[in-house]
Image (cartoon, rainbow, N blue to C red; front, side, top):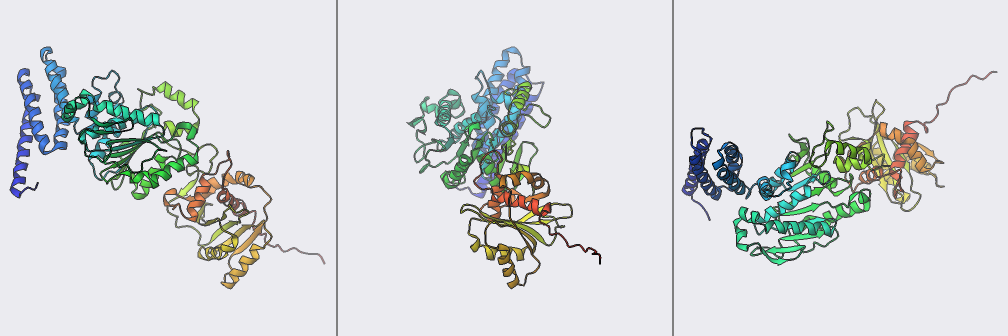
Length: 582
């Protein structure tokens, strides 16, 4: 339906008139001179005007009702005479019901109104950022991703379930895909959502559901179900485990990934985290029908490699995440992503959620929990698992190289011994303070014969003046490279050939301190995964002293640099003149 200019002006005038009348009523309700019986009449008029305002501006009418009328009604309930208290409370509750149509916080409060054990009202200080973000993502087209992590039992999954139910009140044509690691969880979420939309409280908020008389389903299964008269291809709700198939399914409102990792037993499983992330990239991300459908990731952080952290890294590359007024909330510069990470203990070591974690219990958990798990699971600050002493969180990194680096470079070259080994050649520049910056690399599973020309190019491009080669094979690689450099008229590179007698594990262990203190690696945000540097850094940051490693070539060649160049074990001795007696 199109409006003429005159029609739009008339509608605007009507909105202005209604808002002015509503504000006049608020003034009356605030007045101490007005009788309570008269105020009850004006309360009824205020609700009637809100309904008219709602027809023209849903979100605007709900906003003024929540922030202006509800506080006044609460004061009237608390300060009224006993005979009028119940009537004022009835208007107070009806206004909450009105706001719950388009305000998620009010929706949760109204659904919990008669519950003996409430979640939001007892944890509002810690859950409010999450509630506000869910409310915003429902209506803000710019906001596409919400990543939320809390310590266990704080209510993150509960709010995601209520949000799903609220979505069907916003429109019965909304559809949601809900995923988790187990059938028990996703089917439990599904049953809870069904229970909410069948409740009388839900029908009070969304009158359409009164017509269903508590039986709103046309198709009803535990995992997949459809609301009567809903315009969706198959189902309004699709519940799947991470191993279940989503082929052919589509969501119009939200795809919710909730607790995709199965607790501590999977925290250190690289294959599990990689499998989840790969399915996200190849299958799950395109299950939405349009940009109107949003991605919501909810859970507890178990490791830097879990799906929550991988999505945060990906979104940060799209648009940098920036701090907000809330210390636990970050938002991307383009407003497409919100990240919420709430710890159990704040910076002052005080519990953030006394309802779930009283101070003494929180401190006891800290004392009795492995530091890695405590930092990840309870503090939402993922660190490297035990034994990963070169993880991203344990090494020095740069995003921009400083201006005082030397024009020349130095490098080491670790040749491949087996077919699955990598030829690894990290290249460094140093500053005047003893710091060595990894600025380039070769890292490939290729025969040496195929890499000679690339090595020569790296020497020339980076002006490598010192190259230490670990050569435990018969062919003299030093002579071969020297001859190739002469052909290019390159004489500035000193090549030192070293036959290694120390085991890799021992060399890495002996030089880890030097690597951590004096070597500066490129930051994860500037490393592209499918490059030599990306593969090398992935190898380095995942190396563990506590378990076997599939590839250790990257960190071994870096430790060789630390030993042979930084510590000078391969420095050529300068000849000294001696006086011989005649």
